[in-house]
Length: 224
Image (cartoon, rainbow, N blue to C red; front, side):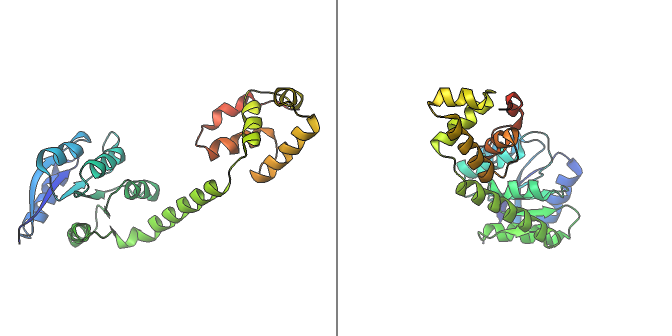
């Protein structure tokens, strides 16, 4: 059986050296490329076509974006995250971008070897002591996504939110949309219930979060 080819990208040379030593002494892996920056993630895939790229998550630059680009351009190449970052949120983002495994630095050597083996088998591997936190983070993100998908604003409700964003009063919204003020107030009540908001500003903030728009734009809202 031919050796599994591996590229290692980490901005700490001593870590790279350690990974290379651990992998090559098994006789199962062949390290074909090493790098120290985020550009080397895609670069190693383009130049060497390794089976697996071991990547440090905390290097400067958009590591998660690079992971996603590799997985899109080279779907046969697996990504194994090997990092000191204990952020469940970052781990969830990396896995969501296409990484096959997440291993915390400081774990037993066998964890990295097992992670690469699982990745090659099309499986997901997470450091056991960290798995529960990542699973909880992934479940939370899934709940948020389901909530966004199930909470759509109607065209009229969205029009009202956009006018609120411009700082329009109820009377001005009514004129702009050819509605009565009573009807606008009815829409406002519906929006507050639907978005769990207590006032006009919270309506705009909640609606923007629903669409991934920064909250800062809500400062223009005024009262009735």
